[in-house]
Image: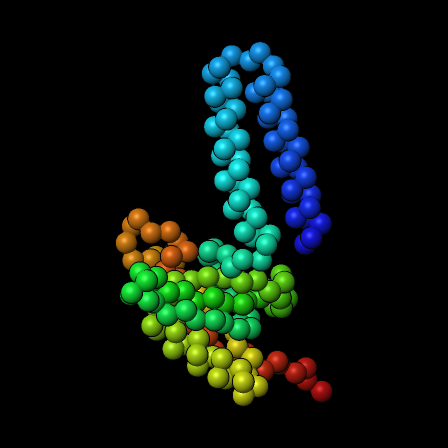
Length: 172
């Protein structure tokens, strides 16, 4: 992880030096220089989004279809501060029979009262020694259920949490 951050920083510094050389040290037409400014500005914002994933911040991405639930932190909406609230989940994506296919990852989903109570119940079951598994809910057309047409897929995700089934033992 640290190596990735160092490499990304070094790459960005090298690109900035090349960019400065192209702007100052060459006699490029002003349209080309303006285009370079636009491209490098876009690259800056793109790298910022990559930094968020590399730095361990919660992803505002679509939840996996099936996942193992580890923990959650709930931030309720605050009307005085105009904060909408969030639910931060720590999950491991699961494959059908192969088990986990990735390392655990933090996800952020917007706060919904129904999800709040569901997550609290799952955490209580986990404290009693019952591992929790989750599945993403889909809408009627097989898509993620999203209210409204201008919202991102990540903005209103629904999921269900339940007990991890007991493993099937082989016959004797």
